[in-house]
Each structure stands twice: as structure tokens, then as C-alpha cells.
Picture: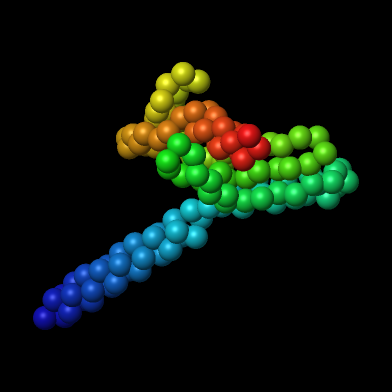
Length: 133
């Protein structure tokens, strides 16, 4: 009978531990969702401050273009020009070239496709240019 309660206790502990770990993982993934964008934004602002360049960093801009919208991660507007920056914070192997519409991320055995950031940023640049036409 003692073995039953011992095994039962281990099983209950395992279930609670696994549930806690899963929830903690989900929270961690949600928390780090935009960590790459936050890091780039900080670096851009540090650049303006330390190099004493007059300018502004605008983050997470949504503009209309061709009947749809596009979301731009960062726009650096300064005396040296206007810079449109797309941020990706991926790990694993990234496969793709400048002409492909989709790139592939391989993380362990999982493959995921995402839009080519060069094409994505081209659309962002066109959306900003349209503001000045």
C-alpha cells in the first residue's frame, strides 16, 4: 500500500511540474516575442545619443499601401538620412536568398517559412516614399 501512495505522489508531482513548466514556457515565449525589436530600438537610440546625431527613432509604424497595410519595425530619421529597418530575432538555421519570396528557418527538426525580410523591407520603403509623393 505504501508503494501505491509513493507512486501516486510521484505521478501527481510530475503532472503539476509538467503543467507548471508548460505555462512557464508559454509565458517566456510571450515575454520574448519582441525582444529583437526592443534591442534594435535601444541601439538606435543609443547611436543618436552617443554620436550626437540629431534625429528620432519611430518604432512599430503601420502604413497603408496599395489597399493594404504594412507594419514597419523601425524608422530612423536623422540628419544622415531616413533608414527603414526590419528586425528578425530568429535562431537556428536560416535558408534563403535575396530573390526568394519565402525564407526557411530550421530549428532542430522543425521547419518554418517566413516572408523574405528584404522583400518585406522594400515594401516598407515604398510605403514611406508614398508619404512624400
